[in-house]
Every structure is written in structure tokens, then in C-alpha cells.
Length: 285
Image (cartoon, rainbow, N blue to C red; front, side, top):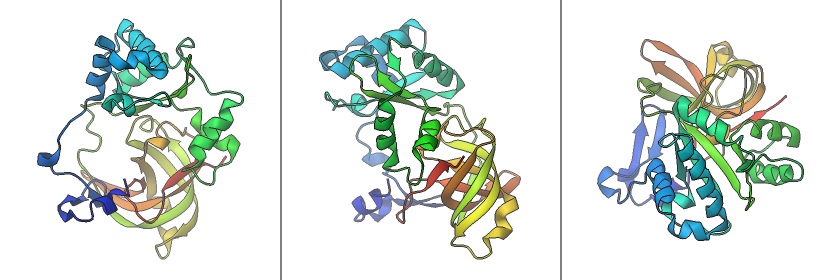
């Protein structure tokens, strides 16, 4: 998404300030949106009328998954995104699923335990997974990255061996971020201990944290913030469900002041809205 700043350079009306994120993001005016894709409706439509999906090896695996979803009354809880959403899939396509809210997360967990549909990454396939993720999760060792990745809803389809993952999304009725506003202070790199992961299982993910060590910062006297930094908020799906209470994590992100109704505090924010580099969160032990 950081590339969108360059892509939309000639359209300044697409640059908007987000009170929730506390920074400038890019967005398309509603009147310019030509098509709205529904992940849930797309998955239901593929199940009802497979069309070309049935002729694709990966598509056949997707159809077997839609059969399971229908048989287990999980329609509306799971959707499909990526190439199968917009109809540009081919024999090298992955399957990208999304699930919604706690009920959707539970249904997706059950789906990914069906060995006749999805097999977990194991053996030599772990190297394939590491290469896939290490491209953008810099600085993480093989063992730490694999431990982090194994906590997510992902694997390989039973027949075509295609990568399949599911990103948990907050439910439509979730109001966690309805009153939140943020103000960016600067950028910071630090080691933290995860104190609460209950809200970290869906995107956007929120983790309770306690600062162990500040490594670097664009802010003078950053140590003065340390005891007041209480949470990490990630708008990057890569870190949803990746951490558990007690983990030590290396974070590199924005230091923000957040206001949530009558409560205020400091946190670390990981967003795609940066042109200076990538924000990361890696297990450190």
C-alpha cells in the first residue's frame, strides 16, 4: 500500500488524514469505486456455480473446501479473496480465505484441521514457508519464524499442494476501533513482552505489551516513554495470531499516542502506510 502514494501522485484528493491511524493514507473517493467485491458472496457463488474454477487443479481443492463449509453451516463466516475473488486465478494460484469474528475463527480452525482438505507445513515444506515469509519479515531466525508462522491458519491443499491461508477479520459488529484516535510521535525499535493476546487473533490485532528494552528511536529520551507503552496494534495481517502471552518480540513501528474515549496512552503501531521502510514484529525468543 505504500506504493499507492506514488501511483496516486497526480490525485491529491486521494490523500487523506486518518484520525484512527494518526497519519496520512491513500483512499479512493466512493464515487470512483467501480466494483465492490464481497468475499463471502464470492465463495458462495463459486460453490453454487463453479464454472472455470472446476477446471483448475487448485480450484478443485477450493470446491472441496466449499463443500465442507456448506456441510458444516459455516456459510457467511468464511469468504475467499485474492485471485479467486476477482476471477484471475491460474494453476499457480494460492487460496486466500478470510473468516469473520469469533464464530468464523472457530469454523476456520476446524477447517484447517481437516487432513483430507489441508495439510500443515512440515518437513521440507517448512523451508518453502520460510522463504515465502522471510522476504518481508527481515531479521527472524528460521526456528523463530516457523514457530510464529505455525500459529496461523495456513497450510497446503491436499491435492494440488497449493498454499492456503485464512486471515481472521473482526466481525461487522465489532466496535473496538470506533472511538480510537491516534497521533504519530515518531518511529521506534524495541524488545517487548506480550502480556495479553486475546485481541490479537483478528485483524486489526491488538496485543498488550510491556517494554523490556528500547533499541533505537527517532525520539529524544525515548526511555521516558517505556513504562507508558502498553499495547501494540497491527493493521498488517502478517502478525495476526502470531504471538502469545509471555513471548518476547522485537518490534519496529510507530510510537503513537492513542485516545479511546476517556482513556489515553502510548502504543506501537504497525501499518502499511509508510514510505521509509517496513514495520516488523518478530519473535525474539
